[in-house]
Length: 101
Image 1 (tube, rainbow, N blue to C red):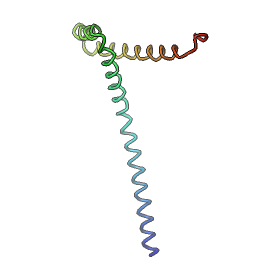
Image 2: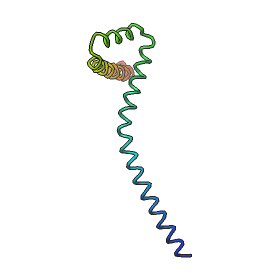
Image 3: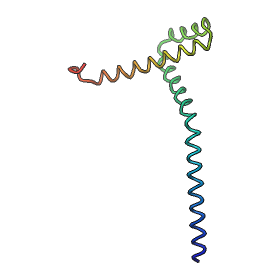
Image 4: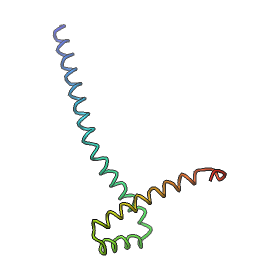
């Protein structure tokens, strides 16, 4: 019976070590996905904000046609980042009491 328990203990330790290794590999793989998901989230937020502003959507399409797509997308990324920062700052400032503004 004690040899069976030793075997079970050894098997458990091996499984825990394998699980730790898999968890580390998954964490490393997920780092690349985080950037992709953040970019997709940014695109979804941009789409939602443009839903009520069709002129902005037309302006982006025109910018893509007039500028080279790579340059236009870089500028769009900078603009979306700036808009996100501005929105966060605006929310932060609106949460402050009027005497601290």
